[in-house]
Image (cartoon, rainbow, N blue to C red; front, side, top):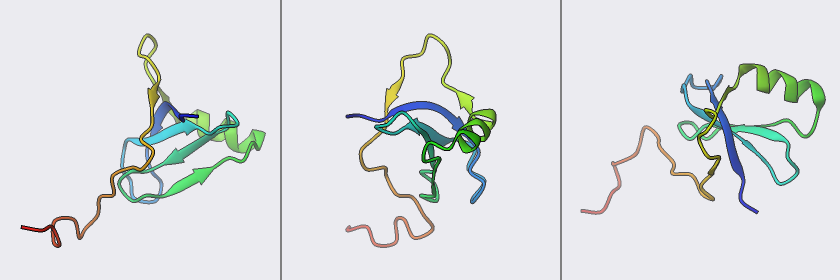
Length: 85
């Protein structure tokens, strides 16, 4: 089952402004930052879910929900140093 993107928020670990908020297979929201690869899972806790949704910028109405990539592209300080030429 594909996980759906439901919004964006700032990553508290690295400050990236567009960390992805998605829903897992159980319908619980989680945050994943493609910049630093940090993940935050609510595990169905009502308090955690409420706080995450307060801070989230929802996907715009009328915009179809997007499937999140199965394996996000890693980006970091060492990108490009070891690329084959």
